[in-house]
Image (cartoon, rainbow, N blue to C red):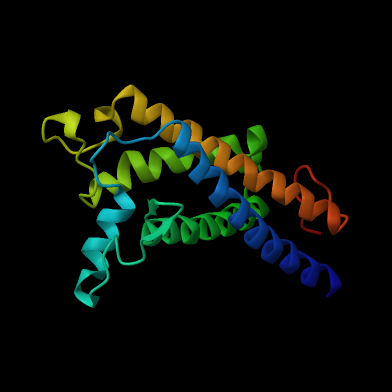
Length: 182
């Protein structure tokens, strides 16, 4: 019974700590290598506008000024929520498929890039890059700058979840390699 409680605590704390830290890492990586060209709406912004517009919420509803710079609050919140959700998927997934942790979680970042940015986001119609002459932004239509930014950003992001998971596992005296569930 104690082992099940500890496993739940590992999942909870990795989700909270990993989600928080990884959201900062992903956000920070986009400062160095913005994935989109200037003036393009981000997929999170497009999602918010399409899915919450009927409630009067749009991608600029939560914008705020910080030191004279406009910060897109709704898009930031969206990325944060996804970081927590994908941290949960990662830690629970590692119970059933420990290989997801390959490369300190880098494999997970590549999978997320391919699934989300290469397939799901374009499938939902939320990626039409200005440089693609009207084509949907499937993985094979993305330019090298956008693709490398997304892949590297997601690798940094997923590796930061793994580092947080290692810290949580160490705190709870669990093995940091392979299956941590007893």
